[in-house]
Image 1 (spheres, rainbow, N blue to C red):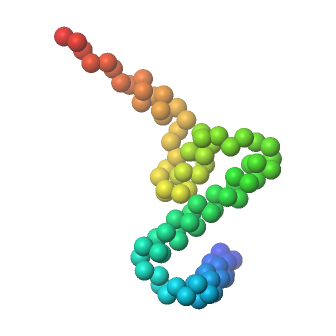
Image 2 (tube, rainbow, N blue to C red; image 1 turned 90 degrees about the vertical axis):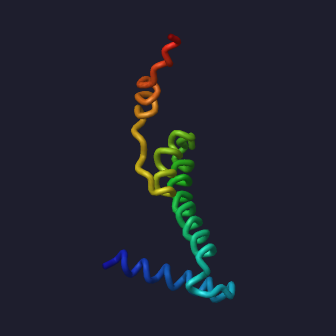
Image 3 (cartoon, helix red, strand yellow; image 1 turned 180 degrees about the vertical axis):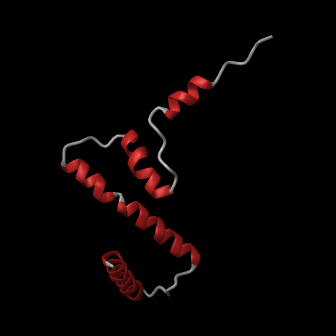
Length: 95
């Protein structure tokens, strides 16, 4: 029940912001999609800030593994997947 209450609360907050910005709700599709993308990117600010506060580095490998799947919806790749794919490739036969 708690996630539903949080969701309705955040939805109401966004509705207030829409009203203050004089944007119709539901927004036109392009504006709505850009807003959703902003929400997905914004969700990654908290884990990034937590990592920085813990003194851990922000690397591209960490970003690709932790943030990109949450933003794009694609499942994370296994760390060895890139190596396995590269080793499966054989050079073309010159004959």
